[in-house]
Length: 171
Image (cartoon, rainbow, N blue to C red; front, side, top):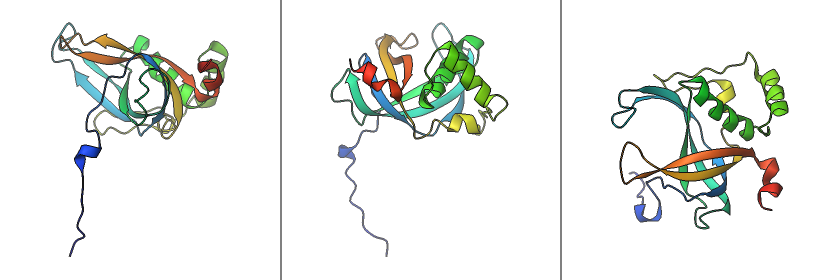
């Protein structure tokens, strides 16, 4: 006989929230490659791809004081050279690198030639991208109107910092 389970779904959140502008310490889950075609709005029909990481708020530095434990998704787009710098910044910060020229040179030297692959069919990501899993990072969030769905808002990630900058972030 199978054990009986008593699950109370009212005690958990099944949705992602758009958090107010602020600075949050988040932990990263396992990333997954994606590909999508915009279904409406000014970019209708445009194909984009990249990697999505589920994030959980661990600490609120500035913003919604009730956000601890809430979930957000960071979609790192890589369909253009301009877009691909942001997921690189996310990964650099997750791995403890500051976002500046010197740190980027060190990062590039360390990870050049390693497994940066990602497969949008299977969702698999390479070894370098997977290193973000379980890491914490400081993210600066903002909110912007969703151009594809009038009246709705989406989360905007504006800055990534390594947790080593935590003392500076709370000043």
